[in-house]
Image (cartoon, rainbow, N blue to C red; front, top):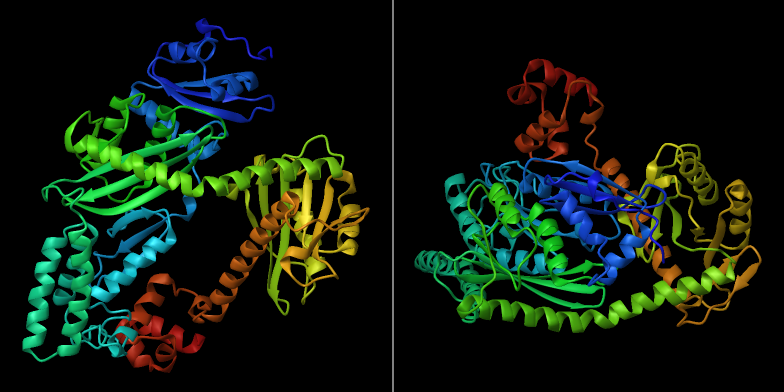
Length: 598
């Protein structure tokens, strides 16, 4: 195939910089960095020894934009920003990175709390993660709750928390334990998450002995059970055990064609504290160096706990720039190392072995995804007589008897769900439980966005709704000017089970077999938009039902509301408080506003 783009090296500078390769419609296909832009770009157009990914990319290039910078480090930082902005199809990205969780400990507060977070913020809290699997986070939190005397309520309110009733909390919520003592407990949790198990075990043993001496046998027994669990973790560290000063991440990789999986082993204070696996979407077959570079860029941008050393199975391009970038993130030296012998090499082999094992476990699922994304799409494209089928938009409505009515849109594009293009809609023009009218409003608003939103300038090839012939026919007429195929998926009259969902077309109903790739594709998309709509509706309903009433009073902001809840313990107590008591917390004028406003 003849290339559409004619490369002329003289057009490009020899400075460090970032390049954006664009397709026919101006879309960004790939973002890369270079120490020498001219030399790096020229390498794409040398026909020998190119990977399938590079060959596929070069065939699609119509334009190359460049941004020159002063240093290779600046190029790396800018590359990262551009990839996150455009999420180009030829770049390596971690799957569903928005779903990763962090453990957040509010050490900046008088009585620190242990929470979950989806992003690391510069707010004074300590963060641990990210955790790729939510179940792993909850396992860790369960062990922490079992091993340490934590309070699950608001300290000093006079109301006992659940852990107090379970004989876990020593009475922080009731004011029986001061901030200094409780912060010492939180410090133990931090040491545990940092992998300093010997220190934690020593401190908990001393605390257990103290409780037993005070005849607080039930609390002592709970600490004993927690000690057993932590001790078991500590004893299992023999494979990677090192001195307490060792802080390192060990990276392993497994790859086959365009599928890749990276395993990350985290060693802190000489102990293995975490093992994570990350699936990377390569789309096209590429090499390990490209995958490792993509992982380093994606993972460490948001990592909460940076090590002193990162052990890699092989060199990455621009290792020096990565060294400097990681060092700038941590505020201290971080070293990338490819160990060739000894303990380091053994650990990399262990990480690679784990990656291979995990890869084999999930490869069957990937194979099913591939079948659904190829055979399922191909059958549907032919059935609807479409020239192409690259984008499906699905819509759903959620409400409770007409209240808090919302709409949701999800996007399936080129083989996978694209969460960056999901949209939520508050229903504005419909009163009462009328899903059909609500759906019409959502679609009207979505297609009105075509001119103003870059991502919605492209029409979907198919609009998918959860409905029957009547709904499909009416929506088809409403969208006739856009020439978009409308299909539905609905429960068949022949069964009430999910497996018997029927495909609804304007021409009639198609009963698909249970193992149909097309059926599985449409069910997956339908279930995803249903989940997304319900989550939005539930959030709005919860916000409305838990509203304090203070929000409606002029001059009462979030800080004042938080101060009142902290002082009185609940909104009911705030409402019951006298103006004099309120004035002690927020002042006379604000107290008067609250009394008259509530």
